[in-house]
Amino acid sequence: MNPSTKQVAVLGSTGSIGTSGLEVIEASNGRLQAIALSAHSQFDRLLAQAIHHRPRWVVATDQEAAERFDWSLLPGQTKLLVGPEALVEVASQAEVDIVLAAIVGSAGLASTWAAIEHKKTIALANKETLVAAGRLVTQLAQEHQVAILPVDSEHSAIFQALQAGSQSEVERIILTASGGPFREFSPQQLKQVTVAEALEHPVWDMGPKITVDSATMMNKALEIIEARWLFDIEAERISVAIHPQSVVHSMVEFVDGSVVAQMSPPDMRLPIQYALYYPERVPGVANRQDWSRGFSLEFQPAEVERFPALKLGYECARAGGSSGAVLNAANEAAVGAFLAGELHFTEIVPACRGVLDTHSFISDPTLDQLLELDQWAREEVSRWVCA
Image (cartoon, rainbow, N blue to C red; front, side):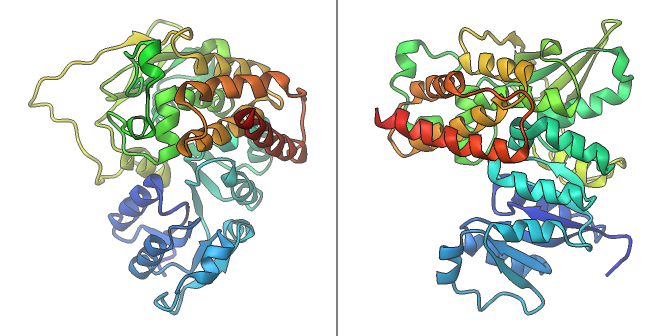
């Protein structure tokens, strides 16, 4: 093993971020190596990845499904670990240099927490970690002097644009959003939205949960909360702009009026690569902008009246405390109910609003309290669905 090679644990390797991350690793000419892979239940894909990349560990978090699966083709040097607690075990290994945290939802919090405690660099695609426990996670990272490098295209863009000035020179950050497939739908049209329609994102290829979040704009609401903690900036200095082309991934406005944007064709391999190689920039596999052809860029203000999820995001970014954890858990449960046909598309955000408004707010929660509220919020959505 080359001592200069960065050993990357790809947690959530079978999802869209994980598979893109493995493409970046494969194109690295040995500078990056996948030392660990994980999946919840897509074990056919996980096994194929393990055969190709030959990691030291693979983690199958769905224990019952893992016990039924045939692992006989797993490479001899690869150790199989089973159960969600194995994510923490892998993230804590001394050989791991970087954890690509690509698990969707609050399920990624424990492994990211363990990785920070063991001083691993975090390439963070799991926005829910900061949404649910932003204050605690950023404090832990400061205590252990750990870098949290954003992988979300919007937050990577902000991180890159911030290199143009100091923190004190920042006026505001502007998150861009495609607006999802229903940005021009009337309220009556929204009531007719089906699961299949919600899963058709006009630009990005993402998993079901994030695709639905993009359609409701909850994804952007969660990004507002993530940005508040990641960049230590007040909610009042975070704006959202609708940008259907998804070429400008986000912007930073400085106090002198200059606006610095990061732009590129929509391709998650670019922000993943930037995080894995940071602070170095290297040639990569991401798509390039074709400057031989004309194109237009369009921006519109995002109105909270039209996108009520944004209002929830701003409220939680201002309030902090337990609000982000409750909103995140309620949304995960509501989206799950929608995908299962138990909740209508237009009921997702109101369900989240109802749970958020009825929870007992804690201004300075512990991690255990956040985990308890996470479970409570999911149960409340279940009662909301059954009512």
